[in-house]
Image (cartoon, rainbow, N blue to C red; front, top):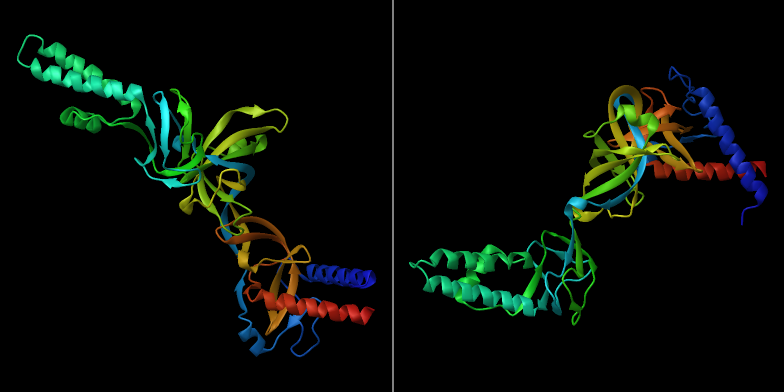
Length: 374
């Protein structure tokens, strides 16, 4: 177990090294480069050409670009109410079979359950009798009344979920169907199953809840100070802890009508596509909402940003095979790039691949410094 004094010295060396890097980094981008062959500074690493090649080290210059200003918000994912269904019993009866269960994916028209219902059988018999009567009275003075009676009988089956083509088949075959089917109204997942085989149910009894997760909503809180620069219809980006480094595209579709007194925020709704159903309702998200305002920013690829001793750093190439650990302050992130507010200058080359090797070498060097100061 490392001695407390050794750990303290290690942290102190790192802080002093990073502070020195900040001092050498002038606004103009000028920096001191160690001469080829000289001893590396405490926050620098020198590698041979072979080590650079085998370590897969690649660099890319920091550059100034025109970016769009965005506001930050936090929120929580929820089901899209436009694609959420609560399926209930449409007639009194008994559940005979359950054919889909919680969590399963279903398609539109798929049978989820079957139930025996005397009322359903009685309504089918009424349609058959009305159809036979209409046939008998064709051409007579009661033909219209018979046709109206048949249409009335047919209409009673529609609230039970039967389609017109199914009622046509009943009229033509004169054969009743023993079980009433509960079908999925759209593609989605069963998120709740409230009944089991053998349950007796009354009209309105809960059977299933179904959600289409191809689109989700994010309920976000927008601060009062940001309301003047956002409006419905603008693009938004969602980020989650579950998928670090990934962005999910969405759109702000609603800004609420009221403000919450304590937080001074207004509810906003972001709608986002969810291919593969990777976004799960209940997840917390960080949301960046576009404002349409442009600004110039110094950016680097996100792959160049590293975490070292719980601080954001980059490795800057300062010479042939020489890399300097540089503490940076970050700003907005967008489309695989991160804004650098402090610590870098335009044109400085940062390591975008192979940072693991440099971090390992930096840790070895830090351990060496510990022994020297012990």
